[in-house]
Length: 342
Picture 1 (tube, rainbow, N blue to C red):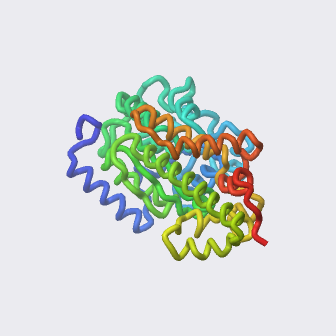
Picture 2: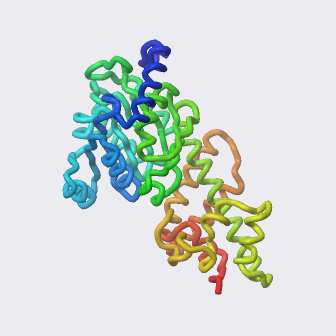
């Protein structure tokens, strides 16, 4: 454990438990108080605001000046670069669109790690959806860095990969699920912070395992959505209404999230993207990106994913045909030519 920058395990475990007790009594531990947040998109903006509402001292950065101005207008401090965020934060959270954005924010000329010099933040949390190898590479880089000021709980800076599930509605409601990779003791220490933005945290193992869990989850989600959409479209061609099939699926073995919570057939379920012309939600472009990450990771370990590969081709086709900004459930209409429920 000491090789990773932690002091005696028993001391750290006591510290981690005290963090959770402090959180439960609404007192924010001092080592988590000053939070820098980078990435104020659809997800990150809600996550950062939930931290503010929970009482954390949050400073934000985004390359989009309009996104930062919304926070400035609410009295939340902003910075012009990741480096400036690093100089004022004890913890830094990143929520970015892709692996290349993450690498630039961490390793760029004005990045968080600024060439490997001494760092102020003791903890970095990357909630972006990236490939596991990117997470592991950044973890290795951070393990070689040093803190400007050693803390009683950490001798070196630490990082967790902590992608999320739940989408924009869960981000806004503070009900995200975090899939976390990294040292377990770091996870325990960071849990109060994560639970200010989510309802559940799941420890997945070492560095990169959170990212691995996320791309596996999204591959399964894509495949199940396509399977359900294909079955609904087939049913319509055979003369069965989608609402009837939905009732059957949801009380039998075909039941899944794509049928009972996120139904892709317009007119069957209210409050989901299919009920608003597939606007809002998780775009086909993002699904194609995540499937590409999954397939590249599978290739890297010599594993074949025939269904994942086919799902990637379908979502690439949807994007090429103009549906890249539509929710990924639009495959029902725009790939399978499914009809609205009347």
